Image 1 (cartoon, rainbow, N blue to C red):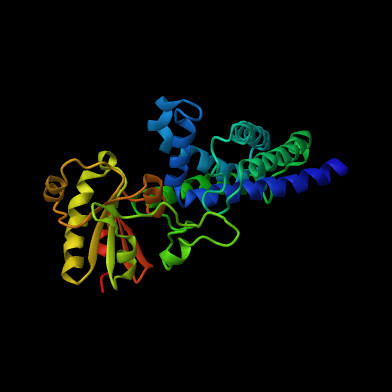
Image 2: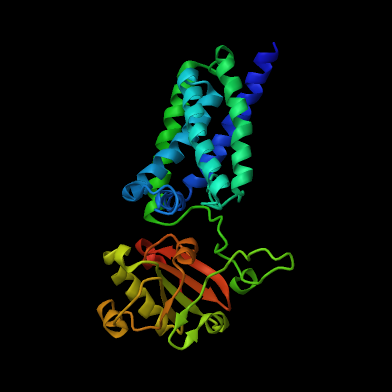
Length: 323
């Protein structure tokens, strides 16, 4: 009786946790891609040959988490589901132990940008949930399909199909829910201020460094500004620059101050401005800050008096709203 009750409690807790963890990353798979790239980097796991596969890995992980959570709750293939959850959590345990022990990755990205946990907090969270998963293994016989096996099967397959549709949409546009510090409506200046407790502000390392100094304050003071962000010219979608340049011209004609932000070193600025038809001030900005600010490369952000008013991937350049 005790094992049965423990199994049902564990089933709900583990199922809900994995569904939540998968969902908050599902709406922003690029964020998980960046986290995989960090783990694969030379300074962490030294598996740089896997970096090109970071996005497929992130999509596979996200959909697996969400689907397995649903499969557990509806009771679809319980043996496969529980042991798969055990394997996933074992991987998470290793990664979070490694981060905690060697202080390599300060945020594992387990809950995307929705919930920030320290490596220590994440490691012990995974330790606790491993006990619940072990309880599920011991109580496998008590995990039955709810409603019917057919319903469990349809619900599980549907979760995978819907997840793939969402991933495809987000990869071609922007996250459908923005948990980051650069969400629409954010006051940039307010989020760059250091608080009395000494914590790092939500927005940091965000700058527009030019030969004439940092233009961030000037940008925040403008009634209307447009930021064109290309965190890395080598990885920028070439076909995306033309539509971005076109909307930038339209914005410029309407009185917007245009800035182009990148983390790439540009040897010949005038030639680059001419080549891409972007005759606007170019400013250097930290790559991580740009990746966090917007997932598009190139991406577009409009700012009014320091308030973020709109964000678009280059694929949606024609839909940019100009005042």
